[in-house]
Image (tube, rainbow, N blue to C red; front, side, top):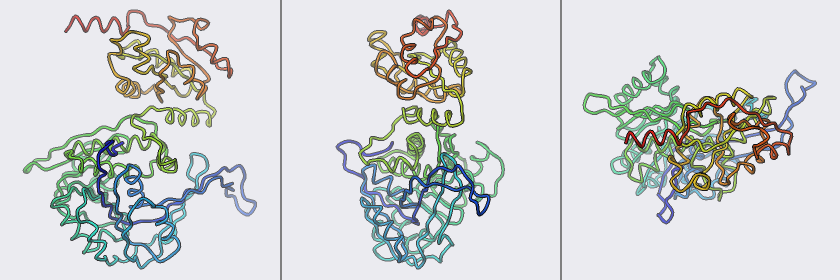
Amino acid sequence: MTGTVPGAAPLRIVVVGDTLLDVDVSGTSDRLSPDAPVPVVDVHTDDRRAGGAGLVATMLARDGHDVTLVTVLGDDAHAAEITALLPDVRVVAGPSGAPTPVKTRVRVGDHALVRIDEGCETPSVPEATRAMTDALLDADAVVVADYGRGVSASPAVRDAIAAAARSTPVVWDPHPKGATPVAGITVATPNAAEARRFTGLGGTGMPFATDAAEALLGAWDVQAVAVTLGDRGALVGRLSGDRLDSRFVPAPSVTAGDPCGAGDRLAAGVAVALASGADVADAVAAGVADASAYLAAGGVTSLLADVGRPPVDVPGTDRDAVRVVHRTRSAGGVVVATGGCFDLLHAGHARTLSAARALGDCLVVCLNSDDSVRQLKGPERPIMNQDDRVELLLALDCVDAVVVFDETTPDEALRRFRPDVWAKGGDYTADALPESVTLAEWGGRVVTVPFHPGRSTTRLAAALAHVG
C-alpha cells in the first residue's frame, strides 16, 4: 500500500467530511423465529469503527501519517465513541446540531442480511468553526470524504478548501447527495454509479467513463476526474486545451469480498501519492493498487487487526487463498491446487492450469519464490520476478489464488489450506511426487493432467536468446 517510506517524515494530511459510526454484527443463523418467518442470528462479533471521513482518517493514521479530521459531531454518546475510536487522529469537530448517524450491518457468514440506519436523515448544513477552517493550513494533502451530510457544503469550509487547493493537492471523493466539488481541486474520484447520477449519461465501460469524465471536468472545473470502475480500475480524464486527455488505470486481479471502504482507500492512496510528488495519473494508479491490496487483505476486517501487521503489497497472498478456499468449501466445492515456477508463462502452462481447474471448483497455485527458483534452477533464474509471475497467473481465468513459498517443495504451504486435489503435469507419476505423502495426511488425492511436450521455459528462453 501507499504508506510512509522508512526513515521519512510522515505526511500531514487533513481529512474533511462527514463522520458516522459503523457497526458490523456477524454471526450464524440456522433457524427461523417462531414469531415471524425471519432468520434468527446468533451474534458472534460486534465490531465498531469510525465511518465515513472517520474511516479515511483511520486508514491514513494506520499508514503512519499525521492525520487531522475536520468534521462535525453530535452531542451524544455515539459521538464520544467515534472520538475514542480515533486515538491516533487529531479530531477538530464543530457541532452538527443533529444526532450522530449509526449504520449497523448484520451479516451471516459472507452474506449481508440487513442494514439498520439510525439518525441518517440529511441535516441542515452545519456552521464551521474557526478551528475547523484553520486546520486546513499547512497540510501536505487534503482528502474531502463527502458522505452527503453537509460538511463539504459549508461556505466557510469550501472557502478554506479553495484556498488550500492553490498550493496543496486536494482529492475529493463525492457523494450523490453531497456538495459539488470546489473548483480548482486536483482530482475528484466518483465511482461509475455516482458519475452516472451526476451526469445523467447512459452506457457502460470505457465509453461511458470517458464521456462522464469529460462532462464532469466541464461541470466542476476541477483539474482531473478519475471515474473508478470497481475491480476494473479507473479512467483518469484531464483537459488539454479543448481535448480530453484520458488514461485507463487497470486494477490488479484480486479475489475480493466485502467492497466497503474501497473507495475511501483509493482516495487516501491518491492523496498520499500526490503529496509525495506523483502526477495525477500515477497517483490514481497508486490509489487503485492500494484499494486492491486493501480488498485482498480482507477489506474493513483488516482494520480490526493489530496495528503492527505489515500491509499486503501484492495480490495472491495466503490470506487471499484462505478466503477462496473457505468460500469454496462453504459451498460444498472441491479445492484443487497445483504448483511450479511458471517462469515465462507459455501455452503448456496455460493448458495444464486449465485442466487442473476443471478437476474442482477453485484452483490455488503454489508458486516457487525467486529464492526457491534459484535453489532449483541456478543463479540465472528466474527470468521473471515473483511479483510479475503472480500477476500473470492471476490474469488467467482458471487461477483463483496464488501462494508464494520459499522452500524447494510446497508442502508447508499445502498444509496451510489442505487442498482436496493436488494436480501436476503428466510428465510426473502420482507415486513419484513428494507431495503425495503430504496430501495423504488429510486424505487429499494426487492427480496428473495432460502434459504437452515441446513447450518449456528452457526451450522458450533459448529461442528468445537467438532472437536477441
